[in-house]
Image (cartoon, rainbow, N blue to C red; front, side, top):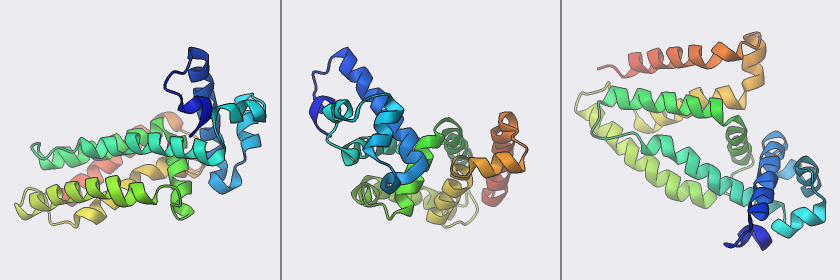
Length: 207
């Protein structure tokens, strides 16, 4: 990130323009991926000229980097809230529901992350192998201890977490497929999904 967007003394108008650019970029990146997106597309979506956009950011990579950094903070929060001291089954089901709510509330962010991963995670390798891996390792150890203590059924904690990710993020990353198959019943999609996933993971994990 560079230029006006990097300044700690941004004016209100500069802050607003930065957010307009980031919102537009999120639309473009989530639809076309990093490689398929251009500065011209982002500028057009933001209603700005290309030179005006480049006053705030050095280029596409700088915008994408800031979006990914913000996304990872949001993405880690639900797993961070999985508490070691709570009831194990309630904690895990709570995590499932929080991840599903994220798929509902942040579909563009989910697709942005999915596109980045499908391209080999070139811009977030350090974050995945660093903060994300550290958090997953810590929570996997919590789940493993619950399983060994007989508080939940025997389960591989890493594959449990992967299963939760895939089962919940599907509703954001493949939302058009879900909507078409369910005749676009968007209002009840997530309510029904929450009930189903809660029952599925409860049956899997109940000792």
